[in-house]
Amino acid sequence: MLSKSKYFPELVVDHSLVARLERSDTIRCIKSCQPNDVACVLDPMHSVSHTFISLPTFREFTKPEEIVFLRTTVPAYGSYHVGSYDVKFDILEGNVDNAFNIIKRVENGVYVGVVRQVKSLIGPLTTVLKLSMRNLTTQGDSGQNIINVHVFVSEFWF
Image 1 (cartoon, one colour):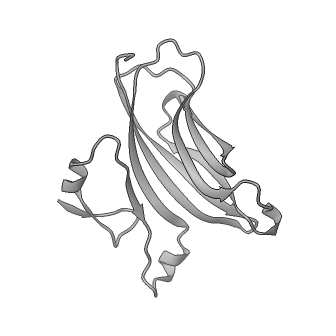
Image 2 (cartoon, rainbow, N blue to C red):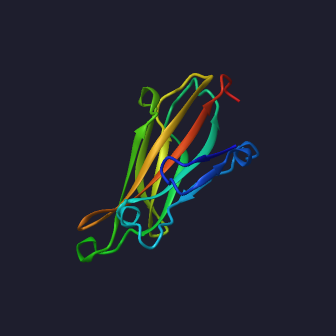
Image 3 (cartoon, helix red, strand yellow):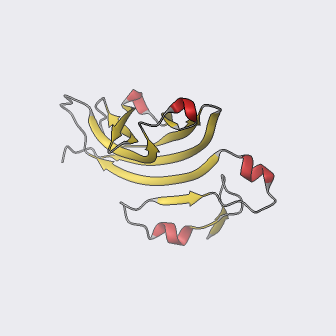
């Protein structure tokens, strides 16, 4: 079955392909504008991704558990005031009971967003964490990527 993408109308999604994906696969749609499509060029959305993760039920929750890493290519030590970039990470939707947060840190000289489970969730439970990764310049936003993390929490601890 074929359908149009909500974020990228020129993209057609083959749902028979989606059904064959493995649990660890990531689906990514990247914007590709036609030369004369000004609206497309001006739209700050760069990509939309879907990824999947299964978690056990943590009944004895003692400390945050790092579950997803959003790696960027943005250098962390550039001079922000002379036109270099910064990155802002947010959880937009799907944060059941505020059980997740996202922090920014530097690894190997670039920014990384780390999604952490900070509270216990008792399964079975499913949610989709809609994450935003926005590129910022001294002039404001220069682009955004959306990452949809499909989270499946098992009723078991193993």
